[in-house]
Structure formats: C-alpha cells, structure tokens
Image 1 (cartoon, rainbow, N blue to C red):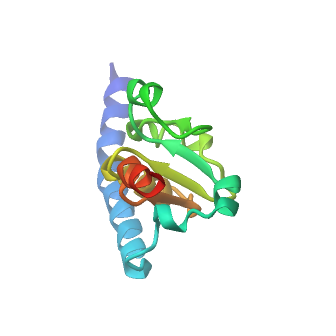
Image 2 (tube, rainbow, N blue to C red):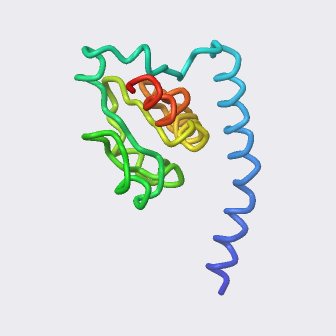
Length: 133
C-alpha cells in the first residue's frame, strides 16, 4: 500500500513540472512559428513532393477505410503520442483529416515531441478534393 501511495505522490508532484515543460515548449514554438509553419496547401503538393511525402490520415479507422489518400497510413489523431515512432523522422510527413481540425492537433503534438518534418494539409481532404476535381 505504501508503494502505491509513493507512486501516486510522485506522479502528483511531477504534474506541475510537466505542465511547465509543455508551456515552455508551446511558448518556444509560438515565438518562432510563422503563420505558414506546419502547413502545406493542396496547391503546394507538386508531383515531386507527392512522390516523396508520407501521408498520415488522422481520422478514425472507419473513416479511413471509407475514403482516404492512396498509400496513406492511418494514425488517429488521439494516437499521435502513443504512435509517434510510426511518424518518420526524416522527409516530409503530411497529416490530414476531413477539414484539418483533427490533423492540426496531431501535427502540433508531433512537432512538440520533436517531429519538425510534420505538416498539416490545410483544408484537409475537402480542400484536396476541391483542388483535384
């Protein structure tokens, strides 16, 4: 019982430090990020970029199975932290969802955890389909 109490106390005491670390990381990111950092538009995805980029669909597996970009990986946005190792460390990684709301959260988490090569597809699949139709 004492062991469990010690673990809970240690965890509770570490929370403010983690919050401070997260706040510092966010402040650093926002201080140097431009309005276009972390974003790529469908128009910017040239055939050369498309051939080399890794696409990650941040939607649910059901939505991914229904429609998604060919060759994309499915890592639901909520799984970003747990599956960070599935995000390539090098090369362009483009995260998308239907509108870019969920994928923006995945991109920000990945960048805060050190993956500076991750960008979000601005407008998501909706913008992609509008540009390619």
